[in-house]
Image (cartoon, rainbow, N blue to C red; front, side):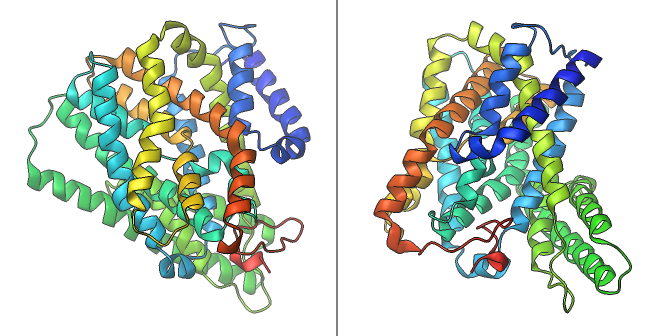
Length: 420
């Protein structure tokens, strides 16, 4: 990346930060802004942002952004409440997500016949993750029932990690590097899921307790405690990878465990603004580079089949899967429709796509990349535009599900400790 590109990105982040409050009130996703501006300023536009083909560096930035997003998102959740009311997350993960992958595979095979079967499965896994944080305003709006916000957060956090295991398994088969041995794949999945969660919980508990004790005894300041929290998030990811699990699932589990640590007497929980700000910065840079490098070429070369797949993946596949998952449940119909529609695709899809390009031997890498890129962009635009409408409809039809709570300035509605 040139010095000019770095300068332009810094100016872009500064300008957006100054006006972010107004944009958030309109539920305009930061991702939508940075993808659009990146496309305008990139090589196929004004040429102000020039990025060399450094796929590994781009993947590193995207993985760091996703790690911090998952950790800070988990820190906002109340683990005890989530465990008591986990039926919604279990339905989304246990029924909704597998069905999303199955339907996505069927749609890919029908609309993209050039894709071999296992590459169609790869594409379905790549575009399945729902990144609730992409429309962050949805997670902090008190008009949305808490259990919906928690369900979407847990779904995106845990599936982001588990999707890596599924994707690597499918990649090995698609690349013909291994014969499908059920016992080996079962152990691989078990290790990825359970080891990742266990490592994340242990590190989150120990790290959170160490930070709480240090603050209670005056051994550290809030500024350094925030840096320690940032380091803890990255440590969770690294430890998950070292134990051959999923660093993303480990980061999310670590954030949940960290949030469960009670602060010392007279102390508030260690703030996470630094980690949150770092995640937002990396996220903005990732989407700007995404827009500058791949969006215009992907749309320019995509045919109607790719566009049709993206539309089906965003509007139909998840919607049907969520409707089936909540059949015969006590969740109001308006809430089910809301969750079925608001499953935006974002950095997780980008990371999974980069994993495929780096570690897989694909027969149709260009087609797979085009489909993933078009799906992400279409999702960002549609979910940003429809967020205000969805919230108003949900609030009007589902108002009795949970009364709105007062949120004090500087606090998030998703944090049960800070809500009245």
